[in-house]
Length: 295
Image (cartoon, rainbow, N blue to C red; front, top):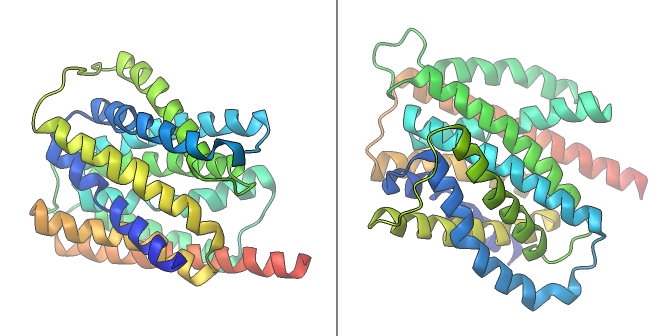
């Protein structure tokens, strides 16, 4: 049942980029309402489980800080979708495992496995193909810019993942950390909007129907499922879940949005997908071995 819940969560969040594209909202507006529509429902869920949330105060603050990183991630990711499409932007944004490995090496002195270091140049080669450099038939209005924005999103996503795991390390009900992270997103999105073109606070149809779907499906249901099951899954299943979301988004992008990457971009996507899966599986296996040795 745990694996089924994890797969269901991955399938749900794989529609995030699709709902954003269908809403035709600007990146910051979509980011704000993704959190604003989700927050009341998350608060209700948190209230039901609040007595089981025994985290110290610093963990609550860490979850809010993780939400700030999530806001920056989602704005960059939405901007990348506008430039290179939902499928390719989501795939590149999920290359965050590279940046998590590098951040752990720089800040925590945890040197990555040699296999992980060897996979990074291969993944970067796939990224170069996805960017469409030198390709006359590359998909996207500005694939090079879209690739850069997606990689920026991956960096912020790495910061979110690291902070969110720390905020949730006690394995309390996932509604608490998720509610706080969503609050951080809602608080910082207007600041990001103020630095740019602002936020359109006037609801319109069907745009906000899609944003409501995005909030309830991904920010609430999808992340609650994933936040609950990932600490309980073994390494192989964890790597599979990481790969499933971008792979499905590529499929939905082709079927629903009629996105058609060039052959070289598609080849690059496969290389990135395989490389990210390899790195995720290697890191998960290493953590599991370390836990066993410590025990």
